[in-house]
Amino acid sequence: MSVLIKGMKMPENCIACPMQFGGWCYVSPPEIDERVAPTVDEAAEQGKPEWCPLVDLGKHGDLIDRDALELDADYDDGDYWACSAAQVYSAPTVIEAEDTP
Image (cartoon, rainbow, N blue to C red; front, side):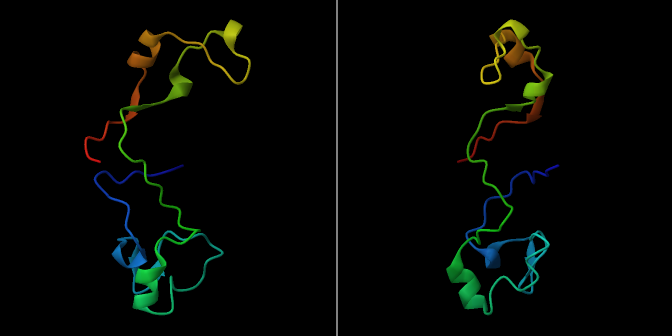
């Protein structure tokens, strides 16, 4: 399960991140049980840690639930799913398009 925070931009480092307070990350994986960095300067310089769960979606159109599409079983070989353009355009939107870069 995931959460999208509309309008949130990807922070450049932990210091700029609203998920951090006092050097502690509130979305870090359970195995990370330490401050994001020993000092504020180091946290600002390190950038985004490898373990950071935040993902930048970037600029995108509407994101849909592909499981809601009615697929043509005759063309489903596990790698390719056949459906009509009308099905794609009528699929429920999960996340609306982003207009900002």
